[in-house]
Image 1 (cartoon, rainbow, N blue to C red):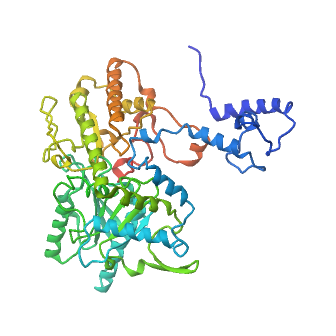
Image 2: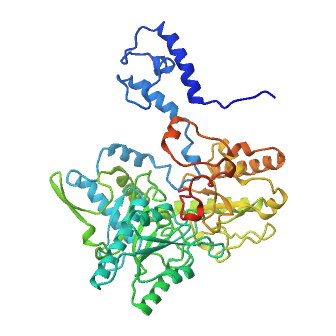
Image 3: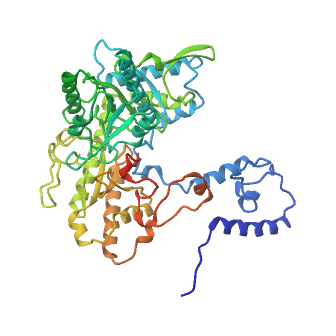
Length: 555
């Protein structure tokens, strides 16, 4: 066999381009950037000259050519509707999109210039506060954010400042604040702790705790320096809701015993727009401002709020829980406003789209959409388990109170006119893995190959380890969003089954090459410092092991 050497594609293209450009220069005397053309592909940028990438060009380029070249490059992206990894909305109604385009130049920081938009912002805050059961006599306060990450940081900062003020008033030390969260937390929660110098007490999760925050571990890890507990309404790993009311009861008992008052912030990035509308709610327990210990809640309008990326929300049950020290009074562009955000200038159009959805859909419209999502997620889950090849780690398809797969021979639960209330509560997320029987029969087969082969069909279905202490279990995950129609779901089930069958039929083939692809472009080499170790597969690269703390998962 002949020897072969690695080829650097960027170096190869540059070398060949140089030869091509020298030849072309003999025939093209005009290189004026303003040269007109019949179509974008008849300009010199189609083959004779590259549009500048890393330095601004001396001259400009024709608008239609630039537009076409960028559009063509973006064709290499995945199809948003087939990105089943993401919670973020990829569909909005035409009228909502029109409102976004019509208001895309409006800046949320210019309150005096855009009073109508600010009134819409205030209405959204009020609607969400009532949706989350703000209590009579309380004056809820809140703000739009760029997403749940910013909202979580604001909620955490408010808890830290209240704890500091109380401790200083009592003459106690304020140098060792800590906050509790499960190892299943999205990375934004750990970012808060690291960026704002709070000890993150990241508590292990297990199959017994349904891969979510374990109330017993909360009880063991709180103390007088605990500024609060992050409780997640919808884990990004498996979709499980964490038991907010149970944790609240533990904190109530702790305060009764010690006098230490520890608040809860609910991270409802996804669940705070799902639980209020589904018949299942949060599984029969309280999770929102009905619980006095819940002081603040965040959500992502751009997830199940059904708005394109760029809007989140943070609401405090009463203005007394937002320390005045953190609120800025801004005198800007002719007006005065109070501000509590990490960003200043930010788009206002998504807030308008959020209001459109709230008014247009109403409670019943949102309920219909969320129930449809739950129904489709249940169907996908049941079909996967019916193959015998897969077991679901998520359990929204199992009868309420049943959390363990009883085997392929067990009767599949269903009833006429069923709703999500007949099943376990959670997000419309399907987290699944190879069944134990499948792994025994095909021990060499890798789950990541399913993800890679489905990617070849343009589906994006991630395969990644569960949180620390459970990372030996890898899962595939599908987020069932509004745009997952029954027709697309039927095709997805067919393709998953066909792909798995193909793996079985070709089980002796070496598919390791599928997980060894590398992005060797100049952009990748100079942007991300993350590493992908070839032999470890998805979710196992990088410089920092899972055991070190919370990692991104897929959001």
